[in-house]
Image 1 (cartoon, helix red, strand yellow):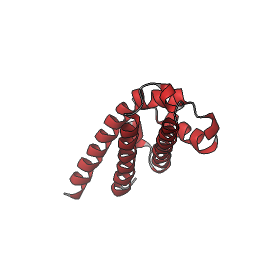
Image 2: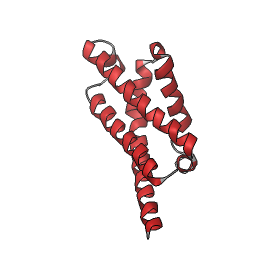
Image 3: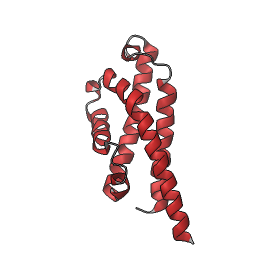
Image 4: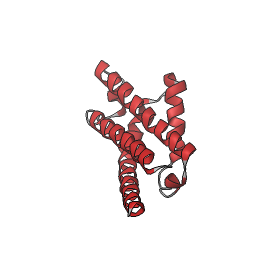
Length: 129
């Protein structure tokens, strides 16, 4: 996978992660997603960004999955499958699952994607020397 394309994909993932984290900051319990119109709007907005993250993972898997394999602590296949759920069966998206993703998995994903980006930048610098 060309480094520029990798950096673009990782940048999009980081942008989406940041937006998920900002939007999720207003949520305290899973029920906050479904008890007010603002909560439903946040659930929709967060789900769309999770879809973007999943699509980025799927693109990365198709082009060159070796970078993802180096970060096996992340369940990349689950991220891609959640993207499929949001895209094709949105009515089955569970607010409790989205809450868990945001609370437990997004911070870990953010850390790994930051490391991946730094790794890619370092490799690009070494190759250009």
